Length: 284
Length: 307
Image (cartoon, rainbow over all chains, first blue to last red):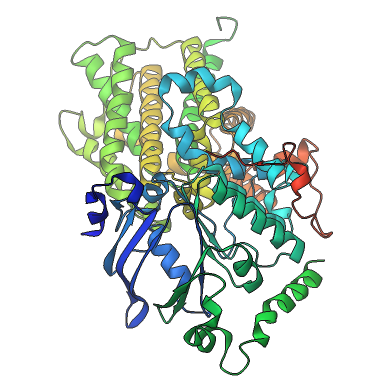
């Protein structure tokens, strides 16, 4: 539990990274999902987390957000050790996330699903404020803004179960943004989206960063990662095998071998774009 | 206020309202996905606490009933922390055992009157008072329903992972709901005791639990008003069928429960059903979804002023 050591830095809070992970490990029985991962995310950057299927990306996100308890190592958020904390407590530290297999309250409306994201802010208000603001339906202004930003206004009162895949993704992103997070974790936010949609999500993520949020992005869409990430972490077999800028990371031979395949490094970069075309057809 | 009703009707109406409180006591835990079968136990706690205070300590009726409800709530809080970490059927069994322990305990102490119960409880609760209490409870439920607390409870029922990810302390809200459930059951127990003047352990039976459970299932776990209306509607229907006919009563509850489970598995206050009934559009989105556009934001420059 020495993860909070960064707090001691004399420069003060400015030096405290949004997330600092030290020697983090997670094993499920005999399977090592994440082993000895150490990294820190700088404030107000977009960090891409990539790696082949089964590399431990989602496990890593689940460890950071408290859904899984690590078997070793420590996690610090804004300098505070949160190792072993429950998800709601981690969320209380200003962490919001989306899930790989979209998790929404299916029988509720889009607006309600987004409102759920405001819970922390509403809960933190003082009782007097709550009583005063009760009539103005607190949280609605945030929802209204997000409905506009994510172009969901038209379906605001619709049940989310009825929506197509891409829209459901956007509702999830809206819910995460409703928490005004200081760390936003997106688990494959553009999976199943058309090219236009994912470009728009990319622009949105950049705006979120510019507004002062640190973003950790798990994504298979290489084009998007190249376009928006400030830095890329490559995970394989639960280890970080490379860390570099989004432009340079692809030149690393280890990354080429691990992620893009042995023989066709250059060609497979177009692979995800092709997949995108496929999902477009499937979605239409 | 209800003098125009004959005494028998008043008694029946009071019984129906007590049932409504019991159904609400289940509703409040169903709302956050906890299947609690301890309600009857808490009802017994409330009834015995208030009756003992009134008969042995000569407390006035209103403080006695309030104390009964508070004691039931405190017990619910303490024991809720023990059983609420369970899930699914284990939770149901845990709460069932809890409720039975209370009833059996009461039956086996001498200071509670043992199996014979307590007689001579002052009968001085009017129907008007009971109506007032149910309405007051309804107002509180409505305020909670509209607030972030109600939303959090519903989120926990629908998906605990989503709730936790949004910063909702699942364990705390479940304990809160369980405590409220104990309070309402205790309140119902107290009111019943001061309506009938006589209580004994055998009236807090499994049969009563099943009846209340059936009502709660039919009512669903979305709107509190559904619980009250279901309790009233079925209570009234029961008067026409006749309370002496156990078979007819069984058919009424069992039959209704089966029909509701088939037609509206989430009860008559299922939000989907309500949306359909209020003719809100429920159109399927099969066409290609429109991508989010920057033009949608009026300012254009930075639509996200999140900070």
